[in-house]
Length: 311
Image (tube, rainbow, N blue to C red; front, side):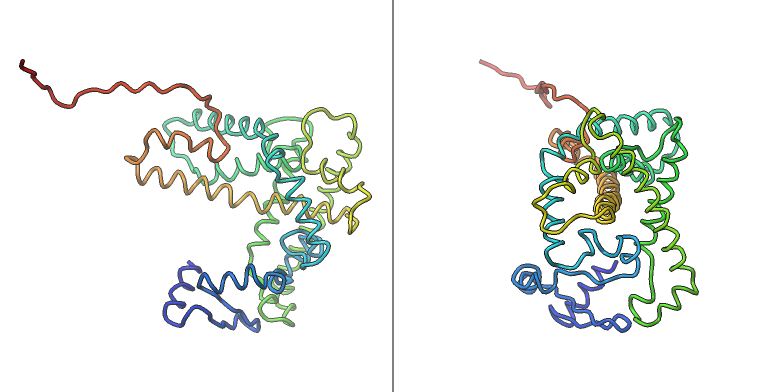
């Protein structure tokens, strides 16, 4: 794995290494002291991420939190995410959504009792379902319904977006070689996915605008950002493309990390079954996915050996 390889290089070459990735000079720091200098002391110097080709397309010209350059817009976007989208109150408001989706997953597992299950795919679908409902007010997939086609289109578009973000782009490492990405079809895929993303997001935003003041229930991320967009105290105005980028940022960033965490947890529990005890019963609550109600646990001690007392 990359971080293991870099750690091995650091053991041989020292805590700071210069690597030439194509034509891109790259500095790797591998000590707590240097990491503090880069990530805290001089954070404003290193805060901006590379202007990747995929981000130029799929982050609506790098206007999300992940890829936008450090500056007034980035600070404002980050503040909105922290205070409006990811606050403890907002996260708690979606507890019912998480409970419902976990119950769906458990029902699916129960229905396939005795069969082999691909938990990786199931956790990925779970993460998508939760995040789609939180971000867009729609599930990742519906079994039936008039708008099933629209939702499945949303599935395909977002899955392609994730694949393109994770893909390899030669032009990112060799500036000026963009023609290679055009020949390989990568740029064409980016253009097509951007077109689909824009169409899907505009349809979702239009639905939310029409339903403003009519919808009942909790605000999803689109509702929140539409409300924030109308504020007069914004340092930098939020355009519709900015809104789309911020919502997609939450979705794309949360899907893989959430599903990977769940898969890792299940793997560790399978590898170390003897380590599962009373303390481990709160795992679901730790990850915010529990549907089990708290009940008292009665522990009855029993003797391992028989003793005879005389006297």
